Length: 328
Image (cartoon, rainbow, N blue to C red):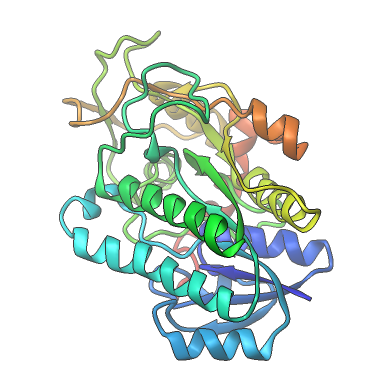
């Protein structure tokens, strides 16, 4: 029996594939390689194509005995989603509908969904809990929430059990140094700062230093990609063990400010670079931290790589040895 990973050649997807392979599991991947990289796959059987290709999905499910699905495939740039909502609803929502339909046809009844803390929008309190209101402030977050709601109905009507994992900022790289983060364009803070340390960009921009936080810069919850992969595996085992559908936040429970991240990169790399303070960006909340008490309690999840220096050290190891990413 195999686990199907959609978007398995992407950043978090490829680390989850690696974790599944380390457990000796059979892995099937579907990825259109729009943002993923063939070189990010350490194994598994790759179907290159799109979730909206119903014939390809039917072929995949016919050729493989799939016991559960881990669903990463989606467009995920907040800014782009606010310029091109059609692309996001088509790929994310319709793509998920095609996947759930194919699962139903093949009688596959378990799916772990890579969601986002963007489903909450501007939080009323931190740390954010699963029962807090979901009011997305961008199209990307809305599509992910729509996907969650769709899964809840597919559970109620068709008995497809799901676990939705909501998280903020994935960071770091695989301990082997073989795979890591390679987005084009890059939008995540830690790799952007590392690019400045590598001299690939002239400076790092800080958007606002007048927030109501200890040092005036935004505070975010960073989580090592290896810990995220572990949570997805635990969620699969939860469902395979007969567990009910559920939603879990993932985070390491402590936030780090933009300035703290910059200083830690300087410490880890031993390199200095210019920091430019710019005006605030619209829609950036001061503090975003997730409570993952429920995931720890129900899934037995315990993030082990939760020190910021360790997360950045693993990212630096990857970027320093792969300055052009996967070079594909």
